Image (cartoon, rainbow over all chains, first blue to last red; front, side):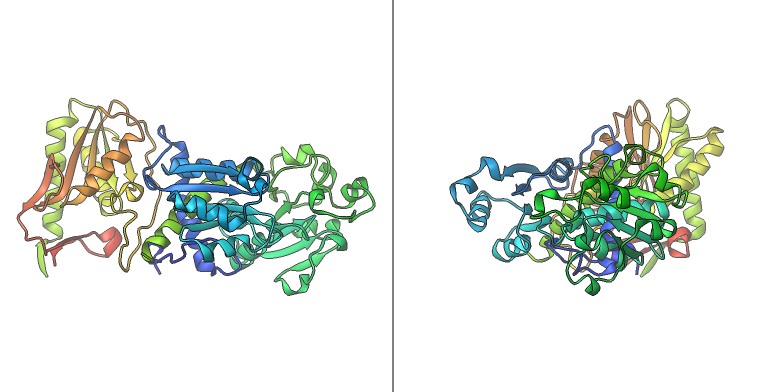
Length: 315
Length: 175
């Protein structure tokens, strides 16, 4: 099928688990067309002029929130920034009431981040606006999965047959889940690497391999995605000491000697330098960490464009 | 279906267009060619080849995707959907006379979108419009500066341009 014959039908982006490989590829193909906007002298297109996007963030975020804001601005939408700390949620307002009140102001797209898994899905069933998930609990962070897939595809040409290691705190990582769905649907093999205490429950139900030793599998990886240890989500310590974790699972200059020379080093941010990754590696020649951020903008523009197209079909 | 132009006539039109552009602007101004995706892109490349030979120079040639600038972008499109592709303009358009190239000038809405898109890249000295077929049916105050063929058609007729590069053969038909 020709690229331009594909019809995007969804008015929400809740997760990548339920998207087909063709739908994921369509988002990535569309993002290619948006990348160049950021290089123009006027970095703006009028596509979403007159539309209102709400950034509804119930958790802290730097990259994702700013990236969505800028993406919406580049498409000429108006953006309302909502953060829990400075809102009536602190006075006891529920998620649905907050969203309905915002909707009464005439919003078109809600970008939501919430600590409760399923919050975006719940919202999409109860309001008319398009809903884009910017991270929900341990469930999904679809735009991160998409931008990681986009970054790999752009550099390697295709994901077919690539071996991608996702290292670290898989249990608490929605980034890992969205990555697993996106990458495996596009033909890559995903290997989860980390101590057993940081593996998710029912890992055997995911389409992945598991390794408890980074040194054992590093040599065969084409891409390595280093995750941050999410201490804020943990009740008890999952490993004896940070130093011990770093010793076994940190990506160091020394350890990189075992990797393929063209391995891509990725990290969704924020980085804990010296813990899961050494500064020299994070800033080194194999690192594509800042390209991930730049590509995130194009991917988020594409997603906002597409959900708006999906909403137009359903009118 | 009626064939308006066959392959020979298309070639003749493109030669005439190139001669016209060269004599009216190419010798005095710094020109650049920009084609509107997707048929305008092919026409632009063919025109550029001709102009390079006539003017004995290398004229910059680019491609413009106008999807994001369409005025119907948020309307339901029936059984099709706009697909965003990249714009490729690898040169500075400032102070140049831009020859904007499209296959057919009909309502003028694509041309408006293209002018809007172009301005995001800089401030050209002028924008001129060159088309293979200029037909009746304008909805905006836009006219072609260079046209291969001018034709009067009722509203229910549509002009389709085929090129070897994308459609296996060169022809212009009315359906």
